[in-house]
Length: 100
Image (cartoon, rainbow, N blue to C red; front, side):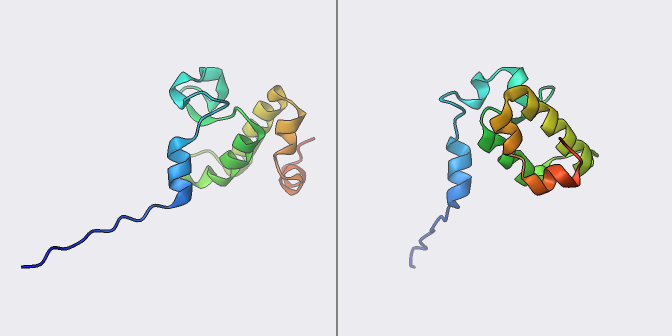
């Protein structure tokens, strides 16, 4: 009787997401105000890269929010964080959703 060897494959992005920190803080250490949706602490926005990540992860979000409403909410959060955050929203997306 032979032994079966199991090989685990990990996607690098999954590992990085698991290990991601936010300006040196763990997700659990962030303030509610650091999240796009503070009521369920989803979509942390601590750096401009988090804005880009939020856009690319919209499809994973549960609920009935439209993409347009999501982008507008994200834009308001980005504005409150600074110009670098606003510029993280692709120019094409800003134009399509009439964000200024």
